[in-house]
Amino acid sequence: NAGVTQTPKFRVLKTGQSMTLLCAQDMNHEYMYWYRQDPGMGLRLIHYSVGEGTTAKGEVPDGYNVSRLKKQNFLLGLESAAPSQTSVYFCASSENSGEPYSEQYFGPGTRLTVT
Amino acid sequence: GEDVEQSLFLSVREGDSSVINCTYTDSSSTYLYWYKQEPGAGLQLLTYIFSNMDMKQDQRLTVLLNKKDKHLSLRIADTQTGDSAIYFCAENIGVDSSYKLIFGSGTRLLVRP
Image 1 (cartoon, chains in turn purple, red):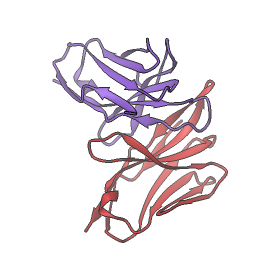
Image 2: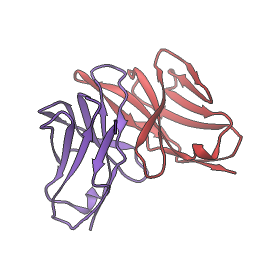
Image 3: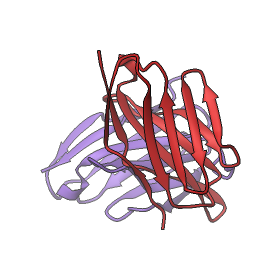
Image 4: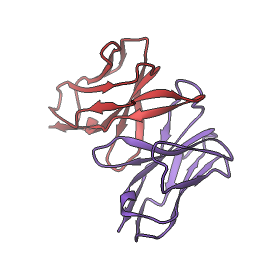
């Protein structure tokens, strides 16, 4: 049981390049989330998904797209990277965020630098 | 609006108690959480408290909740060097038919030998 895994762990992009971050979970969780973490700030929600085939915007969705074609995977895409997207990206999953308490399990993070 | 605030840094000596404080703004939060982030790792849930409680104890951890002042604290007794990490406070708020977490900026705890 690997929990939540993310690939890649590190990436350096030039401005304007595109890339996809992959998140996978093996806990059969319905809900998945993408956050970004910037220095001196808490995690901010980019997009989330309440089930296979569904996605929704979080607090800071601009410049990102997501897809949830399979229940276990949640992809985060940057179509045209900008230096402001330099950050550490965390994926998380939870069994059911429709309940007031539902623990989120986090991946180890992807450190992305855009030059 | 939704806001969670924490102090940025705390340094304690090994064996002392650590107290990490947090204030939040949404009075409708049903659960409040403490997450721990070790270097190079994701966040792990440390403990949580339901909003109708004012205290929760779990081994070396004590969570105090003052709902009137919207103040949450985490006390770590007999702090060890392995407790050095960033601690995030988070509240959950209802959004449509689900809930989302709002995180504070994190408190970096340094435990000196």
